[in-house]
Every structure is written in C-alpha cells, then in structure tokens.
Amino acid sequence: MTGTASGPSRLAHLLALAVPTALLLAVYFAQYGFGLAPCEMCWWQRYPHFAAIALALPALLTLGTRIGDVLLRLAALALAVSGLIGAFHAGVEYGWWEGLTSCSSTGLGNDPLASIMNAPLIRCDTPAWTLFGVSLAGFNFLISVGSALLVLVLLGNRDKGPRR
Image 1: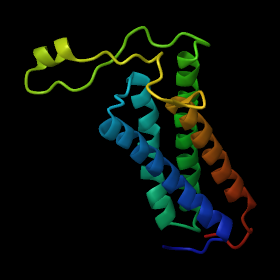
Image 2: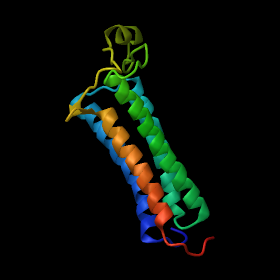
Image 3: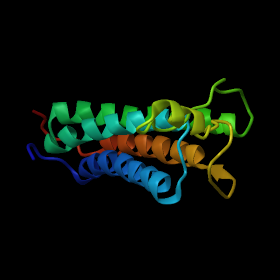
Image 4: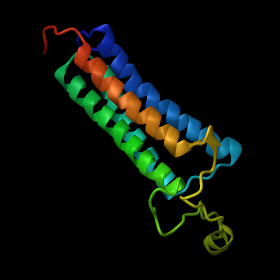
C-alpha cells in the first residue's frame, strides 16, 4: 500500500471493500444454497456491488493518496446506488408503487427452448425471504446506504495531514 492514512480512513477503505463483498457472498449463498432465485431487480442491485468492489480494491492499494480517496468515494457511491435500487425494489415488494411489468427466469441450459418453457417465473413484487418483515431488498437498502454514508463520514473525519 502506498501513502499513509489515519485509522478512520483505513476503516473506510476496508468497509467499502468488505460490505459489498459480504452482501454478494450472502445473496449467492441464498441463491445456490437455499434456492432463492433472483428476480430482475435483484440482479440490478448486484451490479453496483461489483462496481464497488472493483473501485474499493485499487482504493485500498492506493490508501492515503488522492486517487485512493477518489476511488473510495466512487465505491461509496456505487454502494449507495445499490441501496437505492434496493429501496425501489422493497417498495415494489411492499406494494408502495408498481415495479416492472415483466418477470424474469434463470438459465437456458442445454436445450434453450425447453429451459424457457419450463423455467420458473421470478416475480419482483414478491419477496423470496423476509426477516422481521424486511426483505433482502430492504436489508440491501439499509446496509448499503448505511455503509456508504459511514464510509463518507469516516473519510471526512480523518486527520487532515499532508496530501500527495
């Protein structure tokens, strides 16, 4: 790692990498371990997490530099975007507003026509799982937006030292 960074800055970098990684691991475990197939909006929430990881890794490697700070802020933005998509998805699940007019299905397999005809429809307006009335999309909103804000607060609260 290059540059020097205070404790809050280092924690911000680690959070920006650990949170999207943990959330993606959790949803893939739910998908492949428990058979909770994602709908289209579930996929939309995953893409910004991949972007956050792709931005947070070089940010961590350039810790304490201006480019590291820029990459970290972009990673926090990607986390927030995923959370906001999760908020929209949760609102669709709770019936607060209308979502997509089409549903999605998974995988085409060896015989695409048979796979399409036999594929289950995954509805975006029905949560696959809830805990205390909060769906996976709702948890993504809470965790992602909260983490993005925490990363930015930690970055703003670090000691002001010499910059490169």
